[in-house]
Image (cartoon, rainbow, N blue to C red; front, side, top):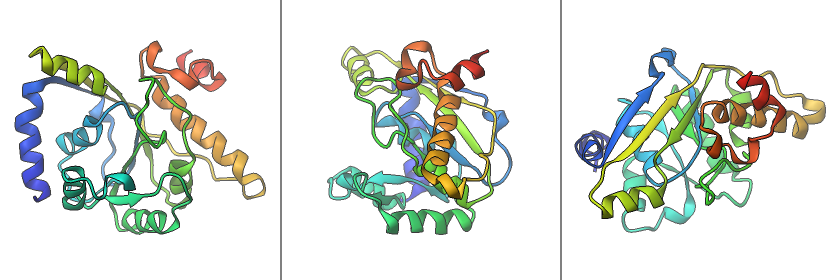
Length: 219
């Protein structure tokens, strides 16, 4: 299946199972950027192709789906980069950087996996690391309504879900401090996650609910 075909199917099917509100997408800059979003359910990745009319989307995907009869085939068709989430996957990171430097659009969830609590988990430093290697803006995206539990319940009861895709203001991270790289990456990761949290309803803020930077952004 080609991306064009997949995108056409999504744009036919998704509006039938959900009302999708796109908010703030006019803030997206022209050209290249990184999308960083929370991760609630399996529809999150599909929304990416529903929203963006681009053939150069970079989508790091958990390696466990590589041999899945459905997700594996879809991932291959979409050019997914299979990522080992439990180790420092250097080869995957190199491929992401190669595509980024070639002008691709990176979409990634800093949490690394779907949230079992349906609220933000602690972000991993991968996005901050990649952003430090390229001088392009980050767009925080806040998703609600894509929880697997909610989607399944509404489908079972023949109801449409209500999905909101909210884009924040573009921002760039300060340079990573080479002398204290780990702390610098953590600070940058917290900035990304708090930017996402600031656009989410309170119940979704999870790990970052009491973070001082989130309180600054909310005020």
